[in-house]
Length: 121
Image 1: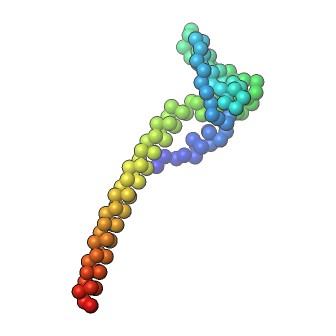
Image 2 (image 1 turned 135 degrees about the vertical axis):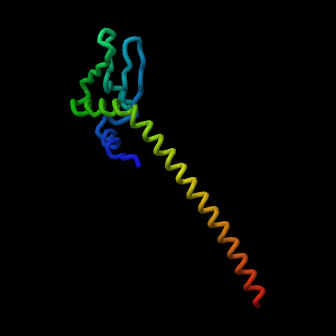
Image 3 (image 1 turned 90 degrees about the vertical axis):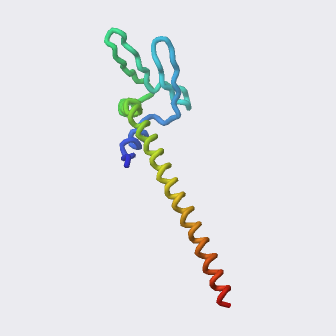
């Protein structure tokens, strides 16, 4: 089963959402929806072939680090969460099928018992 604790902790430590993404020719910026302040501005360095995130003045160092952790782990967290939801849905369907079978069998047994009782009267 998927351990949700680290994912939940990353979400709780990061800047509250929802977030938006704005694209431009040079960068993609993630915005806080409430006041559209920059959470982090990833800047692509073509020469170094890497992305650096620059925090906004309104985001503390700890919160910025938490935002980076959330973004960096999203690529693995989201597929894991999707897989867990799919697994739980499949498990739920198995229980629903079992419940339908038991309910049907119970109905059959009740009818049989009523019939036997009526014949004994």
